[in-house]
Image (cartoon, rainbow, N blue to C red):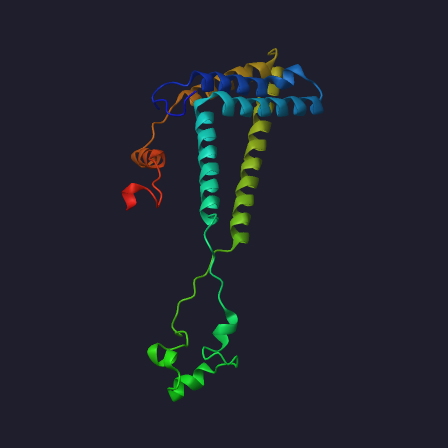
Length: 227
């Protein structure tokens, strides 16, 4: 499936996959009685659904294209850092110690005060760094990691709470005499999931410009257009 399909076209594979995965997830308790068996079955449903979503849906094709673009960009950056056949200039530290060739340590302050240093007289700029520079404070990685872990923990708590609520509602239906209540709940939520997957939001102007700029051919330094 091409990742450049029109956004308004319905992705039937994504709709069917979302509905089937949701139904299978919530119908498991009516099929398997043991808790460990249900956990194993739900893990299989989640892994299979995610693999199929990446492999056969339009969104999965876009994800694969983005991963390839990032990998190609990283490869181009690595090639740009290492250019075969280009010599690398190595500073001569021995010559930098004394421009007169004597090998003695040069006191730049003394040369500047006396005016005996031609190089210093040609470069009247002060050697001391300015004292009014503004220090840039880099963001702390620990803060970003803590925020990410906190968001993940909140999402996990919300998912577990929603799962328990759905399970209690199904068990309440069983107490009322409804046969296979989890299958019924799974069917209802499967329809909801399929309907949500059928909603295809078209990309905005910013997304369209980003896609157009990423699809444009890169022009290197040696191309005729840059001469």
